[in-house]
Image (cartoon, rainbow, N blue to C red; front, side, top):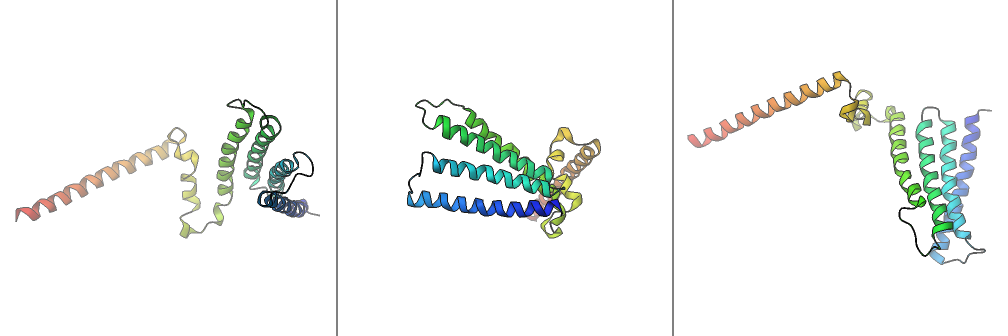
Length: 189
């Protein structure tokens, strides 16, 4: 049996469980359902966060080319989940909440991991975009973060960028002078 198929089946089952948990939590929020025991709904919410991270990890194990992106997304979700755990069980009932707290660290670590995951997932899927969208294999690399940073560009790309700037300046100067001469010639006659 292919391990990717096993991961896909398990992921589908976990997605179903996650959907049921989220529906139950939404019903709690809308209808104000009482806790069967203390922190019941907090635990349901926290489990749903970690379940989403586990589903992302399963996706990472089933896809070789997108593995880095899904792992980073799972780590980001887990960081946010750990921030929520710390908030729920330690800080929620405190009179004085320290700022910043370890919960804030978990919440803030979510963003860099998720942004990096998006970069890796878009790079892994760039062949799926149509040329009409402006995504071509050759131009997708030039739009990446690495080439956007001047310190990480190669010499040839810096030289190309300098030539483009020089050409633009020259064409702007030519268009300004030609439009100015046309403008002034219209008034002189």
